[in-house]
Each structure stands twice: as structure tokens, then as C-alpha cells.
Image (tube, rainbow, N blue to C red):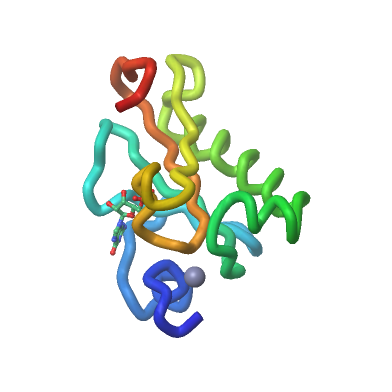
Length: 114
Ligand code: 5GP
Ligand code: ZN
């Protein structure tokens, strides 16, 4: 998708602080971090949200979640705890319509979220 921000990051047209990369996924630091660890994990293929990804390629969604755990481990928060969030739709605060898992950790995370 030529006008998708995250597709541009995958293409290298917009710089990002890459944390991990696989053949099918990219993990990079959120530009506006909400916790000491705040990494976005995305598939390299374009899907607008997690529901679309689940319907199209459930195996890739599983790979994305495994990769989220690898990011948490690399960041040293796998044991202390972390949260994986898929904001889905405008009322949930989704602003970029290329599916992304937020991996948040490194501080106490309130529940329920705001
Ligand atoms: P959403 O609100 O769609 O769940 O999450 C989008 C996330 O992308 C936000 O947390 C926002 O800070 C992050 N973001 C927006 N633009 C950029 C960018 O250009 N680079 C990076 N690394 N993150 C971005
Ligand atoms: Zn995209």
C-alpha cells in the first residue's frame, strides 16, 4: 500500500528504530512510547487490522504473537510481565490501519486500561 505509513517503514522509506526482523515481521520502537518498553510488531504484508489478518492468514497472526514474546524477552520484560495490545477501530484508538501489536512493559500497567 503506497500511502500506508507502516508499509513505508517496511520499505525503508521512513526510518524506524528496528528491534527485530524476520522474513515476515518487523518490530520497531513506537515513536511516542507509553512505557519503558513500547515496541510495535507488524507483518510485512498489509492487513488493516487484527481481524482482517486472522481471517486471511491465521498462521501469520500466530507468528506475530510469537514475535511479540521474543521482543518482550529481548527487552527483559518477559518475566516481569508485558501487555500485547491490538487497538482495533477508531473508538479503540487505532490510528494506523496496518495491523500492529503494541508490546508494552517495564512498568506497572493499570487494569482496566483507559
Ligand atoms: P494505534 O494508535 O494505531 O494503535 O498505534 C499507532 C502507533 O504508531 C502509535 O502508538 C504511534 O505513536 C505510532 N507511530 C505513529 N507514527 C509513527 C512513526 O512514524 N514511527 C513510529 N516508530 N511509530 C509511529
Ligand atoms: Zn501497510
